[in-house]
Length: 231
Image 1 (cartoon, rainbow, N blue to C red):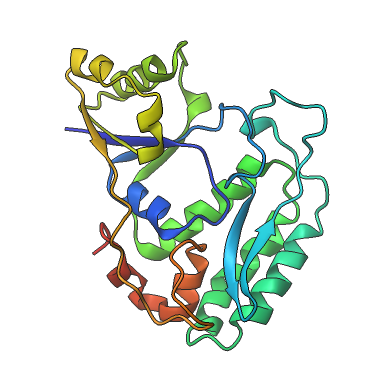
Image 2 (cartoon, helix red, strand yellow):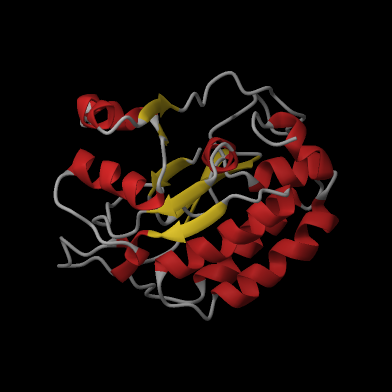
């Protein structure tokens, strides 16, 4: 029995993305896909007294309409210092600021020396999973042979790993051909990222759609209590 999920890498993702990783045996970072602008690949949100704020990694996209996520380069290494400054400014009074900063700040020190977006995303993802005790195997799509066809490729990746269950985000419903999974006797499950409990969070109304860093700063070692698949 093997359950897998496949998704493009995100920068310091929200808790639902991390929870989907925790729900499977193997998670494939699908960075052989085309990079998309104004998406979650290179940016995420934090909460501030003025409302939600985007923190974005500057990347080289001019004229590169078909480049893959794992080919996308950072254009200015000063982004790391800028992001940390924003995080520090807005979370320094959070209950678990110091203990979170102790492991998070060194990641930004390392990330400023990385030139590929995929490598930066993987750096943060691995440490976040480690912090939560997630033991899911994380692999990259470039480790596998990739066949043509959106659904065909997903099914084939499942077969390469011997998986009998595939977990997908709901946004894929618009293009996934469920019958192709049925033909290969692979169970297709849609991940439910709704109904997460609220946690103590400053600055007005509660916001779910922020980086998981918000959860760490506000509840620290109790972060798993606000997730669905982490005990």
